[in-house]
Image (tube, rainbow, N blue to C red; front, side):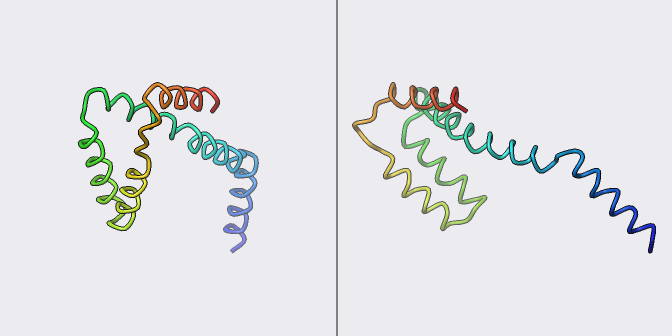
Length: 103
């Protein structure tokens, strides 16, 4: 019993010394703020080569396979509301690049 306690104490001490929690928090922070601008730029680039209907269909079917039909429906609703004729591609590209540089 004493050896298990020593192993647990040693593991917790090493975990604290490695600062794993800080590394995980930093990784999460950068993922949250870096992935959306990259995704925006990828979708913008895809829009040059592929039709909008194909991209929208892909974005609705792939999440359904992973997350389920309710989340896919929510993503479909977001995509419908995201189609704004007053926001052009240069503005989208500038926002994506600016957010990527900022993160």
